Length: 382
Image 1 (tube, rainbow, N blue to C red):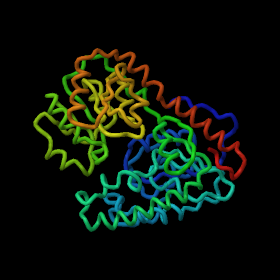
Image 2: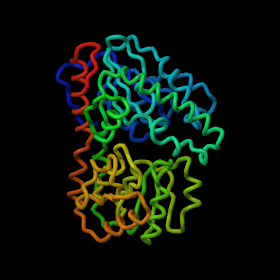
Image 3: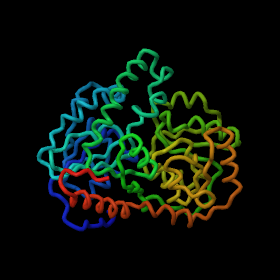
Image 4: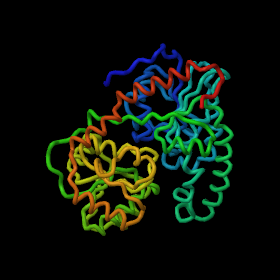
C-alpha cells in the first residue's frame, strides 16, 4: 500500500462513509477505496451493495444499506428507483459520528448529519440524471414514452430536492475544476479540488512498441459516446477494441463493423496490457474527470479526447495526446489521424500521469479533512 500522508491534527475517531451504490469498481469506487485507506475503521453506508462487487478494502467492514436493497434484483434496475433515493438516503442514522464523508454522484451528498457534525462531500458530479442528461438515460427512445414522462416528473422533483439539500454539506471537494463549476452553477457553493487517485504503480509502460489498434475502456452507457468513437474509427480506417460492459452493449454491437472488437469487462492487469499495446486511447464523451485517460497516460500511451470537461485538466494537447474540438465523427477521425502522424514520448506522458497518484490523493484529501474538522462547528465552508 502507498504511504499515507498524516493530517496536521489527529483524524476523528468515529467516521461515516456514505456512497451512492456499490455494484462494481469504477472511478468513484476507486476513490472510495483510497478514502478507506485513510479511514480503515470507518462505518460504511450505501443505498445498495452487491457483495463481492467491490474491493476487499471497501468490504473490510460491514456495509449498511437502505431499503433499496430489499427490492428483488434491484442491482439490475436501480436507476429506475431514483425517485425513491431521497427517502432512502435520509433514513441513515448518523448520530454517533464525529465526521461524515459522502462520496457522491447522485444522492449520497444529501444524508442528514447530526447538528454540529461536519460533513465533507467528495463530489464526483451533481446528479446527471436530474440536471443535464435526462434524455441520455431516460428519453423516450431509451425507456419508452410513458416511462420517460413519469421519470421526468419524478426527477424534476428530485432536482429541486437536490438543491434544497445542498446546505447539508459543510465542505464540497470536487474531482475537477469542471465539477467545481457545476457545483457553483447548481448549488451556489464553492468547492476545492482534489483529483481522484490513479494506481500509477499498477499502470506502467511495457517498453514495447504499440500495436495498430485504438482502444476504449468504458462503461457502455449513453453519455460515454462510444457510438461516436465507432463511427470515427470507421472513417479513419483503424481498428477499435472496446473494454467494458453496460446497457448499451447490444446497440453498439449492432452499429459496429468488422474492425471493432468487444473484449467485455477485464481485470485490471489485462486492462493494463491492452493500454500498453494500444496506439492511443479514445475518450469521445464529456467526463467529469476521467480516470481512463490518466491510466492510459500512466502506461505511456497518448489519448485522443474531446476537449471538454475533465479531459482539459488531464490531457495536454500535443504533448500527452490530442484534444478534439467538436463531438463529431469527422472531428474525432481527424484527431485519430493527427495522433497517428505525431511522435509522443512515453516517458513524458508517464511523468504527467504521476501527478494523479494515490499518494498525492491521500495527502491532499487528508488536508481537506483537517480543514473541515478545524472549522467552526456548523459553518458551511465555501
